[in-house]
Length: 142
Length: 142
Length: 142
Length: 142
Image (cartoon, rainbow over all chains, first blue to last red; front, side, top):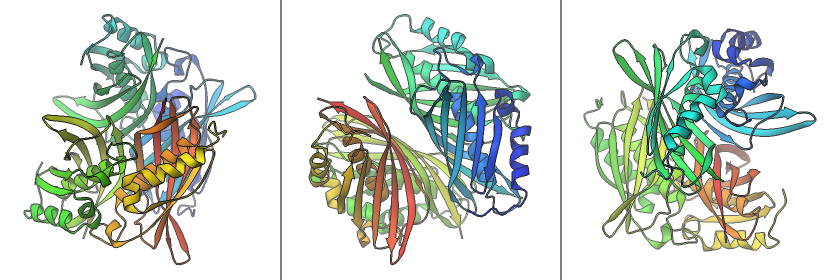
């Protein structure tokens, strides 16, 4: 997976720092490379549902935002990314101290990039895959 | 679409009042009946992306939570609902003063309920369909 | 929903007549207009699963192909359509004498069109919605 | 991934041999183990679209049927499987001499199993990932 933009890492970091909603949630950039991005979220009571599990909306936001960042690392030219659609399967009730997300580009095209995001819940010494998303992203080139 | 639980409206209202994450976002219950639920969200700067549009995660949270509420109105017996998976298409950039969501049950089964959620953005005198989700929900019966 | 191509109906009919796989299955064009298309399929034993129900692959083919035809009716310029992705929910076991499909454009854009396809099973005097798909289609303009 | 049924391989092979539609298409069982199944399809002109590429419906049928077989290898008790919904991304135009599919269980639950199917096109000395599906499958236990 070749990056086209030598400064993609700065652009991705800015995407996390400047996006109001992921910042409001507490989503943090971890690292990225050509075709992938990782992020994390320290869990707080405000992230939960009526039961004690993490709300699907939190997992979806983490999966979608990190997928957009992964797509941004392989943009074919100067531009930005826009989510067209995504599907997420909630595999297990999510609980623990934190979530992490790994987004990996499955196919990078000129107009569309398809990314897979895996969301893990971490508690004590355990790590569990709690959801997986497939995200279709449009490249908006300047 | 027949409700099985005469008190479903109270249960749905509690679902909105007690779920930490939708409450944190500002999602409000509007109304519900057998097989449907409506909700709304006054938009604030914290709901946006790096551009001025509403983050996909906000729309997904609204679509998913309202779908769960719609499914709860047709639970075949005492129990609760759990999202199995959903897909959302972001149809237009979402902006305006508020979002509303209408979730409608497409198929109510004993174990699974399929719901469609439409998210609208409202600004001045305009209303635009900005996203549509299909949500598969498991009935967890006590 | 405005058509851009005055000859779209001929193009859609050719799409059904010339596509080998839908023709092999027996899928027939019924009618179309700006933003929608309808098709049908007389069911035969070869369309079934190991049980007596219609295979999900048959329903998916019908839903996808008819969605592409609906998207072709609103192509913004001379070109063709290509399915990017679709999701289908199988709502009920499908059986009967025939299937019909109604595909309706939800959002027609310059590059992408989103279409919803409903598949119905017909038997004697009954009609049942057996599956529903959301299809994202790329416009490939010449 | 533990199998619960010591005879799962025979059941899976029967699923391919007895299902009319996959047999009609020419889909062949290759191999399976606990949590996975592989299948193949020799391509013929009847599998194509109006252009020279493999129809999305063929790929969807292959992905769905092989996913069901993978889910059958981890059924928690005697029973059968039923597709609830699936999403497929068509990543590249598919052409060549044959398709193969590898389906891998992502999460095996008591009631639901989530499977990922990758479809590859083979031509000469090349192999390309042409589509990927996520399939939610219900376990119907006797």
